[in-house]
Length: 445
Image 1 (spheres, rainbow, N blue to C red):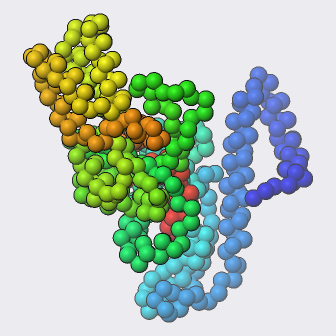
Image 2 (spheres, rainbow, N blue to C red; image 1 turned 90 degrees about the horizontal axis):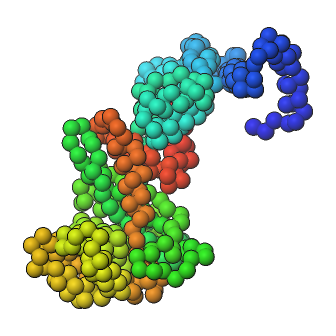
């Protein structure tokens, strides 16, 4: 709704007297107090305008019958008053009530047409509540909404809105899974998909989060493309910042690997991974990750995150040498340089040099086992030469943003469904999919 300058001037002219009177009666007031009073006034105006708009949509003389879902005609009985909690506070309105004599189902056509929720929050307010609920605790969100919108809602109301958005995201993911497993649909995409990503990256990881009295693994994933960071010099050993991610989309679930596998494929399908000429996965060495990759994307380039690989060398150095030992620093520098070049035979030989030290033997064994299992995923010199990103910071950021920042807040107590829906709603927001969920939410009556 775009108000003309002339209309704004007329409204201001009507309010001038009230504003001057308030200023005269509050000689010590400052701009902040005046702004607060104006916000409260605009809230009242907004509520009155919304009520007026609904009143004009409710026919003075309703039609005698309307179509019922059962195929028969529902008959008009009377007018009923309702209230809904909007971004302007509680709003009252009247609407016609119809009852079908065949299936005995009642209906309010005005509620259905306008997406109204009698006794509940409006679609617009529900979206704002959920936006706060995916960002901070429900109690904090309740207080922030009261401060920003001047609307009082309980933390339970925020929780319900947030988790309703998460449930809608679950619905969307089920639809993606059905589409991605439809062979006719997959065949049709071969003819219709235009301009797929030339090199699409995927990344997977997990983080433990509190659910009831236990710790459960939240599996996280992201899809993204990369671009060169402008003005970056040639990378030194360990510098993986030459490429940066763009167009990142996130997904997650509290699920076992077999269940999560289908979500990986469905979200990849949505990002046109099935049509991309090249898929690249960057992750740590967890076996469940690479099993999923090999199941759905056997042609993908597989890269073990540089930082995870280098961490094994740091642990050997810490165990084998005294702290800040020149010999230890020299050994670690040599080993990291070999790893940076993907010289895995030399890396493992360098690790073996410390195997005779009892304090380091266990760390040496872990490192060599890890490197042996992931050797082909650590050809870092070739990966860099071919322009691949070799750091998995994007999915680690996903774990932090989804699991740590929202689910692991101090004092948080989650049911499994509550945690899942809240974090899925947050993933949708971070992925830029909020508008799609808003449309689904507005369609609920």
